[in-house]
Every structure is written in C-alpha cells, then in structure tokens.
Amino acid sequence: MINFFRKIRKQLANENKFQKYFRYAFGEVALIMIGIFMALQLNNWNENRKQEAQFKVTLEQIYNTLKFDVDDFKSQIEGHDYIINLIDYVLEHPDSFAVQNLPYTLHSIGEIGNKRTSETAYHTKNLKYNANNQWQNEISKQIINYVNTLNFDDGTLKNDYIAALKSIDLAYPKVDPLKYNVGWITTDSTYYSEEDFTRVSQLLHSNSFRAILKTLKSQTIYLKAKTFVRYGDGISIMNIIKKYNPNVKLLFQDVGIKGTAIDGFDNIGGLSTPMIQTDIDNDIWEIDIYLLEGTIKFRCRDSWAINWGGNDFPKGTGIHDGSDIIIPEAGNYHIIFKPITGEYEFIKLEDE
Image (cartoon, rainbow, N blue to C red; front, side):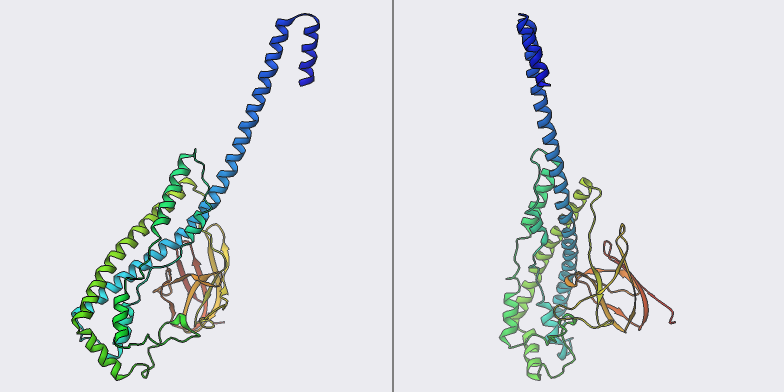
C-alpha cells in the first residue's frame, strides 16, 4: 500500500501536479494515522478484555471465600446467642446445676473467639480493577472495605474470665488427642475432684466473678453486633458480584464424608470417604455407603477447614462448622449433598 502511494506521488511530482501531490501525501498520512489509531484501539480492547476476564476469575474466588465467611459469621452469631443465654442462666440460677457439670458449663462460657483468617483477604490482593470502569471500581472498593473490617482481635474479650477460672486451679476439660474433633470427654468421673466442684460452686457466688460474667455478657452482645454487620456486608457483596457476573458460581472440590459412622474422626491427615459429583451445574454430590450407628460430617479436600454439620436427620440443611450429624441406625444409605445450599438427605436402602 505504501509503495502504491509512493509511485503516485512520484508520478505527480514528475508531472508538476503539486496540488494533487500534496492531497495524496496528506491522504497517505491520514490513512497511516487512522491505521495507528485503529491498532491502538484494538490493542486497548484486547487488554480490557483480558483484564475483564482476570477480574471475573478473581471475583469468583472472592465470591467463594465470602460464602465461607458468611456461613462462619452465622455460626458465630448462634454461638454468641448461646453464650449470652448461658451467662444469664448462670447468674439467675447458680445453684441449679449438678456440681459435676459445673466445670464444663463454665468452660463453655469461655469458648468465645472469632479470630480467624479469611481467604477473602488473600484473594483481594490479586484483584486488579480497571480505574476507568465504574462497576469494577465500586465492587473493588466495597470488597477492600469489607476486608479491612476483618482486622479485629477479640482475644482480650475473655481474659478476665479465664484468669478467674485459673485462680481456682480449674483444669480445661479432658480431650482425647486422637479424637479431638469429638470434643470434651465428660464421662471420666475422676478428672475433676470434689475439691474442684467445691471451688467452682464458691466461685459462682463470688461478687467479683459475677461482675466478670456481666461484663463478658455485655462484651459478647457487642461482639455479636459487629459479627452481624460483617455477615450483612458479606451477603451484600456476594449479591453485587452476582449482579456484575450472573455466571459466577460456588466451586467445591473433593467433597467427602467422615465420622464415627464410617471409620471414626481423624486427628491429622485422615482421608474422607469421597462422594461423586453427579450434577456439575447444580453441584450435587452423592454416594451409596454402609453406615454404622454414629455421626458424620461433610467436608472438602480432606480438611476440616471447610465442613458442614447439622442437627436434623434424615434430611436437613448443613451448617458450616455445625454439629455432627447423628446416624441413629446402621444400614445402607444413599446420601445426597448440595454444598451450595447445604441441603443433605440420607435415604435408607433396603438390605439385599
């Protein structure tokens, strides 16, 4: 094309047609500029397309970690309610507890803690947004603000309370090192002595300890309010991400089940019994398995970091870090689990 225009310019110059020569020269320059402009526009379009694709990938990762966050916040809120109600009962009815249960009751109150690491913060570092894209700007700003609210530490919340229990030399409840997921061992009648029970009973009637309980209740109410705000923020951002990218999905990998109804809970490194993903679009996992009378939980990637429990059987909705699902009767079961909604069902099969 350039050689073509060059020949025309030479011919016009030789014929002394300078007016036409400058017209063609100007046209040539204009075409070159238009070509450069179009190339730049194409390059910008391509870069924006790649940036948009990467932005959506990171958003989907954040969308998934937000799901774990809000489920965890929901469990925390339920835990706060339990602690608040338990403190009220201890204050109003200190003599209504069986003495052998008092150590466990008081340590239950001390089980307050929200300090956790959210993977949302990790993925937010990779969120590269286009400064000229209003949608991306707004979404990124809300995600960053949300992550900043996670930087809190409630470690001092129960310090005075724990110190009070230590002051009477009350040991932490017994735990099996090989079955720590099962919880405290409350069947060992020799673990706490009669002297322990006496000291605990006296502590319950101590004015200073009752003042600590009242303070702890107020602090827990405040902590519950903060957690509720984070829960609402997480839900809101998930909805915004879904509006920006309707195709965003929750992604769960290597879903399995584990518990005493199969082969027991593990301490470290134990593998789950894998389920089969039978519906990719709706993320449905299934398995046929013989279960003992006992308990199980659902989890991902052979890790307790992502797990679901529940209080209902044979069907219910799983809760992140929820209670062990109780299997009341041994037999062959067809199990269906939907990680996106938490729905599960145990269908007992007829013995062959």
